[in-house]
Length: 237
Image (cartoon, rainbow, N blue to C red):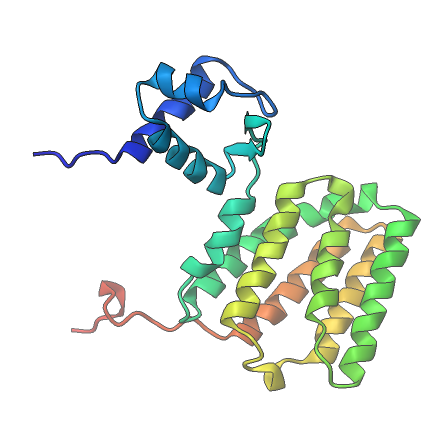
């Protein structure tokens, strides 16, 4: 016998179907709670629970005293919870780095043609802050994160910015300060100086190479992948 679907899950499905059937757009209101419960043939309590869960994932927005509205979709709820799903053995961090490396190396060449003197000055300032901190033996995660966000700002891609932020959130939770003594702070800072210089001279290929060097250094800092002894490719006769 199939398990009975909880009432609040039925409410979620019905509400999403209602939004689709009525072609509601972000910012559009839904009917009143009473009317919606009547139309869907469910209790107000079940409907209320369904609304709460859809609020949690960013589909609906309940405005006190004003009703329920369709919310503009964002990746925020996904990104806020995704770091907790990563394993602590370092493999997830390496996997994420691989994706981020391909993404940033593939997009960074576009920055050259869209950069402005103001953006270059801001990037240069951040890079110099990194150099100063490195010379004093200090880490500079905040400046590094802000550097990458500023770097891709001309592309006007909020999703890309959120991916950069996600990397740092996961990195801090999984990596923390472990291995900082093995992190060549000055080399990392100089990687960013090289990126700024490539943008300043307008050399797309030089910029891509500079970014590749930067990520290679991060990969070396994280360390090599541990072979999976259970994998057939790793077993010996």
